[in-house]
Image (cartoon, rainbow, N blue to C red):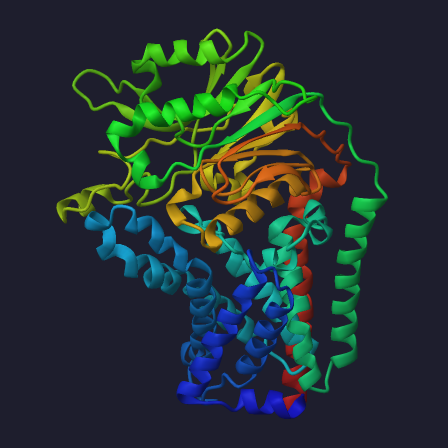
Length: 527
């Protein structure tokens, strides 16, 4: 291992760049749909050894000294994000005549931008670099900061954060309930990078020992949570998830709207399996109602004809609202709650919109160049908060599409909710890793909050997930139909849930302290 470490450390030129890119690309195998956790051990071990050799002339200034590390981190990130996000190009091919030109921007441009966060993390880690366990702690600290910035700046895009690679199955998801994805990012990088110590002598025992303890605790708590802790009681409410599998091109065809609506109604009216209870709540996916509902009262009549009086429909739709005399109306990506009499009894609008998909940043500049928002003229408007949707006395906390990848989108109102509700449409991306990655991240929100998840997708993965991340019932990609399942219960979270958000800065501080002490000792030894 020492010989291999030395070989990697001394690489130069194109070989060095290629290994950095491949190290990031290999890490994608830890993400859905593969879930090969060991891949990230290879990735981060190579990254540490590459950073060991990322040196500059001693007389160079700070920026020039950090530039080699930044390049390695950027190349690592570029490989990771190209391999993990290439499927975004599929969405632009749905209307290829209009948007095929933008495919390279999605497949290469976005990864190139996101890679700057990993370049920053590598450069930050290099500031505290040493020759032992301290450099592993520095990398964990720096990636924790980098991932936090990626999920925050420019509205944030924390897709495929490193911590998810440590949590491919429910057994390995339970720690998220203590530290959240932000804390898992820090701990995961330390554990994944620790094998690099096999290629060096200093700090080998302490670093590998600490990594083994952390990983054993991670697995051990998973076993305890799944097999020892009592399961919460079900809530006796039967949920039906409708997954119609409407081709995205058809959803954009105005002449197909009536057929789309009727397909949703038919799946909602279908009889449950013999001996099963009729559903209390029927859930349709994002933008499943293919027209402005309030402009089509006959649609509400049809819904009332399908539902019994004591049933409720939860459905995604575009909502419109007047902006005042002489102004264009506002559009919202919304969820409606409709009772069995065809009355709208609640609504929730999307808060965290997708840049360039649902609204156009710097719209005036882009419109002057002839580029318009993807979704609608003028784009969507954002709501200010997530109100609970009340359905038969059950408060459901709404998350529309990729809002489920943001832990910060789950606010205090969720404390009174019976479940998280995520409606989405992953048909844009085809049968690629995208829908599976999206599902995993939504699933982790359930574990973090100790709440069940109700997730309905037009196509993708629709499922009822319990508070420990276990799938109770669901439909995989390209499977049209419905599933009925009893809503699981919530986990009563203890006092730790109140300080969970504080644990992330505490972890950062601890790893920063270890890295700083190691750096001081390293410099003293050099002198």
